[in-house]
Image (cartoon, rainbow, N blue to C red; front, top):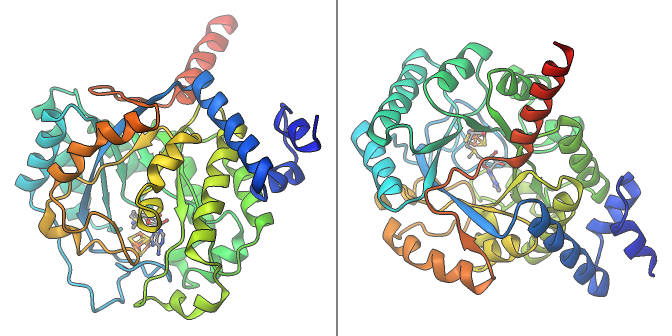
Length: 370
Ligand code: SAM
Ligand code: SF4
């Protein structure tokens, strides 16, 4: 057996093992993907769960150096979707048996915004009779706000750490209190404390990022014991400060291939978590999300934002599906999934098995103590 196969068959992985997996090319890469597919089938199955993505607002108080909707990008026209439109998006997800939605937006921490999200969550719960699973991705908030939104019916939260390396985090964010690595870590702990299934992730192929950094990211995800991960390639945006570092970037194709190796390695490392096929994969390769699903991702987030807002949620260049109506995306999902041997879990929440297992273990331990 080759040395690489020995690595793939381990139960515990060192940082060097992870680096070998991230670096895999040729035959080794095929072996890596074969292994990650086997593990996906064994631990989470071949079903893919849908989360209809609502890009609720591009208003943001932050200035992350990589993001096209950062506060200081004055070229970006701002929008917030009306309540009525959000509810009709949720209704669209229900009517099309999506099982879940994701509400994502730029970050706001003011009382009006917090109350608005609470009331939208309550309303979505009412129209769906609690049938629609709700993930939210609304940035750093206080523990009380996380609790409020959890109690209003959201049950999964996605907040990417972006990079687990403090120095690199500081290179891609302004250095001030609003963009603090420690606050981000604390927010992740608070999301879990509030009761949410915890999702985080990183960008892959950032300027200054090394393979060692990415291996550390994987170890960070494992140490945080996260339930879900959303990660994808970094894609430059012309009207952002990080665009200046364009000469330090590998090609988009190389970033994409590295993202696939990250997904496959993560699946082998954290066997029963949910892994999303990020939209940024599709921005580089029209079949990027399908390729991710083939090698370990099990969550798809079709964009169901009303067509007239899509062009305004421009995080990076070439963001896909910007002028399409939801219907255009929906009709091809079944076909695309069947082409790669996957099935769509219609009307199912598709919660993280890892989360359920952890919860079960806690209950069993408590019962044993009693
Ligand atoms: N504002 C919330 C937050 O930051 O968590 C949610 C929305 S934010 C736009 C969602 C994610 O978009 C970020 O976590 C970041 O990883 C990703 N993103 C932003 N700019 C990007 C870029 N240029 N390339 C790839 N991903 C990007
Ligand atoms: Fe705002 Fe999120 Fe973009 Fe940062 S990544 S600028 S918080 S939308």
